[in-house]
View 1: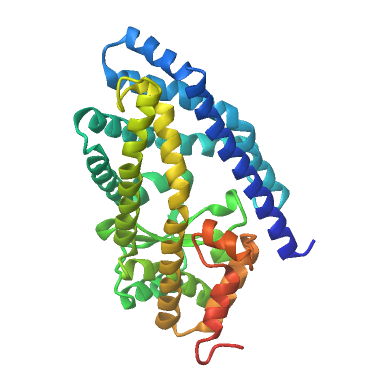
View 2: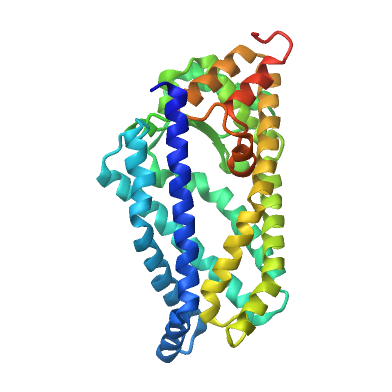
Length: 369
């Protein structure tokens, strides 16, 4: 099978699995509401403890655990079996499962904190949607600051880049881009997958360059510089801050629209109000539906800033051939769809397609035709 045929087949199967998982999640939430099981669980927890925040944590543990168990086969298919079948992943099942648990633990903790914040404001103020969005902005900013220090080492062994010439070149590139960094580290991606990438993580004094060892092994220094210049472009354009603000605006809009829907649903289900824990699946279902509606907006914004970062990389390096060859290599290694259907790209893709990125670079004066 040719590379692009394999890429289309891989992404088609991933899309189907995602659709099944989404449908199963929505059906699970709807069933909890329709059968009255969520209300019975809320009553049982209220009999055990009068503290609402403990009730909420227990409800999330039970309901979230049920969802995890129901979707576990789909998670295995999409995250392990399919990538291995298409040659993207060579990590053994035991290590993949360990990484999945390590990812789920902070994700569950953050989800619990988010739910506690939302329900605290739901109980305290009709303006819960505003205060929750502001709290989420603060949480997201904190995570951006600590991610390179606390989260990335959970999944990768990081070592200083051993090649002094390349290290100095990348540090000079950062200085030239107006984005000072504290150093260059190598992540051992090759233990897990053939995929390659690089990143500039953190803000201020935590900002650092992280390069996958797969990138170092397969790409030329010019191509590595082109990839890094793109990542530096995000910081030069303050895309981290802009992205936080855009995401917060989408969250605010989602909660604002969710408020009347939640109140109407609570009344229709004879709940004690929007903060009744029996309505937890209802709130989750409403937010899920609204998040799907907002997805094209978030992805459209993301594709715009990705194009701007590409342009920044091309201007900063002045090396369009290296940028083009880097994009081609990344697309092949990561099994990207070169030319996805425009509708699919509009709704689901956070980055422009490889074909669009290469075509845009080729239009620059002096680029290879």
